[in-house]
Length: 198
Image (cartoon, rainbow, N blue to C red; front, side, top):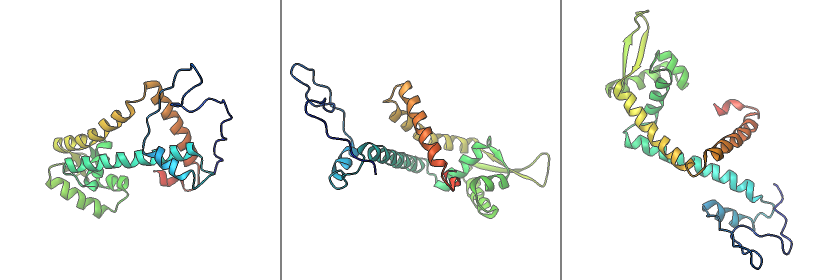
């Protein structure tokens, strides 16, 4: 663990929100979140805890959980099971048309499992299966208008929340955040078994 910050010397400037010297303006206090309390509780227990590293990692975890809950709620709102959304998502990612074998590869599933998913989605009117115009032995799965609308609706819920959260940052700050996270992920993905990031 990284060592905690050294204590400030007498007369050294304080944290934002603390009083300055005589005649100095009082700096505005930064808003606190759940993680601030979490770090404050653990610092006395773990004196070597780096509050900046702990704060950043904890916030990334909590943000991931928050967005996952929003996504799960969007599926409930659009009456979709997670596997149904995943299948529609992969199909949309291929331009709305794909062979069952291609979907099986994208979903990392056995062909029989994909066939069962497609049966259910076809009954709901989200996909249709037709014979290829170039090879009568080949089946093509197509995303219907209803399927695309449902998929987009569920996607938009999460997208709006992502824009709402990142809307507290300026465009320059968003670019900086994206660059910093990229540097972190490059390091994380450099470890052995990087295939787990797929």
